[in-house]
Length: 314
Image (tube, rainbow, N blue to C red; front, side, top):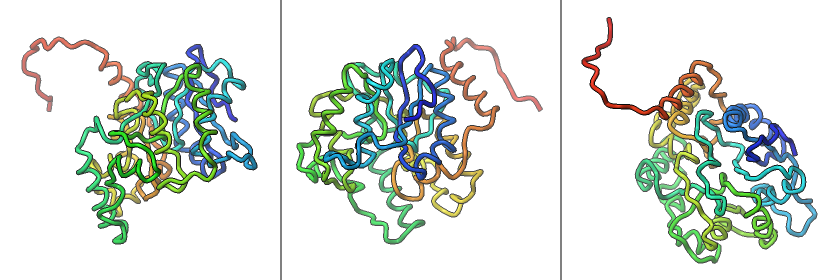
């Protein structure tokens, strides 16, 4: 376990799991600096788990994506000053001028972001754009009809569980230590090591069912987990062409997406999802200063008072 930044007076931390150089190295190089700027703004700690949280020979050992549910119980012992945890996957970039996620989550619930509701664009259309553009520019083998369009009923039925009308991406969630650490640990140990799922033993559907069956979900705004696959298909379709190899263009598009979102998640396994580690973003002081000033401006009251015609100077 690496404590990158000590928890401040708030007792709130950002935590992630990066086991192995394939995960740790790109996180440290391309994402961490955005986390650090955000953490400094809101007095947050940053903790990275770079080794298995449970021995590999344990009968309940499961891959890293499952081990995040042990973070709370481990921190209760190793860093007892932690009060709340925001778990984020390593492939999430943060807008440093974003509001404090811990300020909007009910401590009695688990903060999550819907993949189906409160999106800034029609979900059915953006998914069709993803499928069509991947098929056209990435591979003709990419299907135009697949489980990309599966309903929640179809998804939950695939693992033999009752369905809910919504689902969230488990790559980002927020919880309070006192209310949820032990609960999440029990959830981890209740699931067999040989768990099956449509994603090859992944945790997402099982965690969705666990959270929603206990009515623990606190739906957060889309901006706290904007999905780059959706953002790119909707706003930057030209990146599906060879433009995706233009580092400067990719950087500007990612920064443009971040400027209107808080956490930008590069989830997935297709080419779009690799772009976060293609080029380092948010290194220009002028860009950061502009974002900071705009965040301050959003808090300033405006009057609508007429000031007369204002025209650009030549």
